[in-house]
Length: 402
Ligand code: PLP
Image 1 (tube, rainbow, N blue to C red):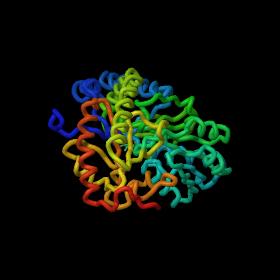
Image 2 (image 1 turned 180 degrees about the vertical axis):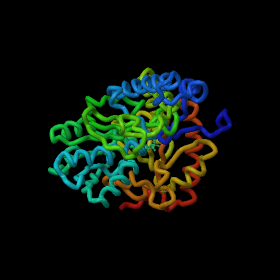
Image 3 (image 1 turned 60 degrees about the horizontal axis):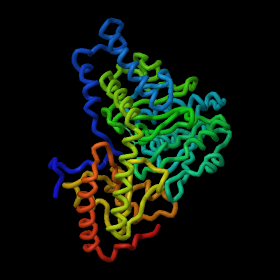
Image 4 (image 1 turned 90 degrees about the vertical axis):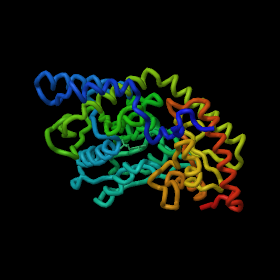
């Protein structure tokens, strides 16, 4: 049996999501008749600018921020870079560090946009602490407090992990940061539109978002910057976005992002409950029908749409290949595949094993997932796992401990 569409089922919604029809519809006029540059003062420009401001208000509302606290960027990679490189040096200078370099705390399972930026800053003289996570992928808030020094200017902790779905204790970390006067940045890409987010409750000063993970277009993102937190520009030019992010605004993208935020706000509760119940059904069926499987990530503090499973003794790349005509899945980190080591996120789980890092699959459910998809995926998954285990019988159930 194959999917009625003739295409593989899409179950990789943590990688990206399709733009909703309502989003594309909202964007369309801004490619054609409403092509004004929002910086222009004539009627075309003013109409574009008012569409941008309407979208800004929707994105702000999604996270409980004010519209003046939202900066549009080209995506979360840029937002993460801007938060770290734009806000941390300004904070270091305020603390009187003449070099503009201080201490940043982050964690081992952050997205590469954070980890690589921190590594580059380390080479430039910054002190970087990369905290470990426990076996479920959680950062221990006490570790954050203990890592702080007089030079700490920022903690960068993701809201939820993109591979294993674990939701981090941001609110507790936010309280610690507030007490110590340290900025808290959070990459909230995976949670936005899926779970309620409120920058006040979380105590976050900077938050990275991207539209393409929440049924908006690709190439447009935002950085929330708490009022009064200075951010130095990474790109200079025409002075758009309060002089922090120069460049003509991507009006269709921004309008699409705004529409996606608006739709997410109205559908989130119902849609997240629907996806999490399908996700739980999938996990129950996997456990009932396939032996030697383990859940990666926290059993309850996790994104509603994410399931990440280690199939002991099975190479995830081989499993993905044998399923690819039926279902589009991923092993979690495209960047890790081919390295032979598997996912760095799963390797970072305390007590985790190298075998699990090479034998794990991420199931990312979404708006288009229905119960029939679960049946179809199970039918093929069960067969593929037993076929691959039969080809490598000695490896089955004997994951290599590291
Ligand atoms: N942060 C996280 C947690 C992600 O999952 C992604 C997506 O790959 C990114 C950052 C990068 O986002 P973008 O594709 O908008 O640059």
